Image (cartoon, rainbow, N blue to C red):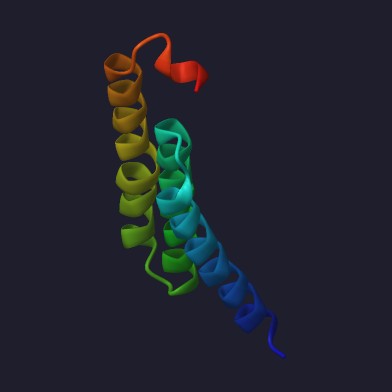
Length: 85
């Protein structure tokens, strides 16, 4: 098998696993982190598809900026006792 096919399959599997984890986690912060990982895998997939401009935009917005905004929002809206659950 071609090494690029194997790498592409692993990246798609990573996208699927991290997306399912983002939905399945009960802890909101864990879901946000898994969503950021999904964005990172999507950026890798765009690199594999030879679309570096889209990959840079996905990495900047999908993986970094939205994850940071969600983490800040979760931290601001949770109570001190809710974090221990």
